[in-house]
Length: 131
Image (cartoon, rainbow, N blue to C red; front, side):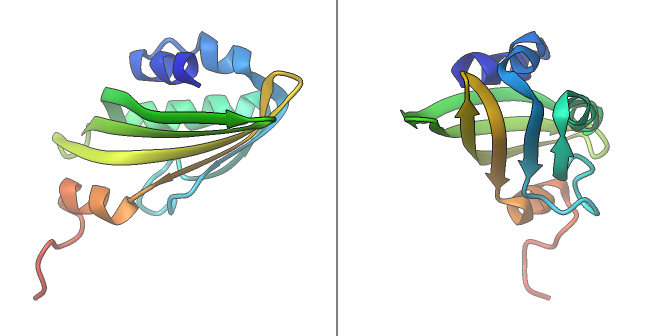
């Protein structure tokens, strides 16, 4: 997980593509109406679509591991992140939680969670104060 996430941060995606199964199920728990990269993707082509959408809107400035735990075929990770939201020019800070299910040493399923409301507030999309 650490090598894949380091590659994701640097934009060198070979580690990611080498780590996933051809039939990977890739899920990002974020509404597509606000995050183009949110939703579900299937296979290597789907993960390539995900990364293209992610990097078209965000530049990952920081992706620091806080905790990575593995047991059997399950891997969990918590990361501190900072990204430049290209359309607004604002930097956003958030935590990312990842869950991977491995099969034969490769990622078979991914689920990614982050506080979408906080990111939208930092981007200026949602109000931070009650009206």
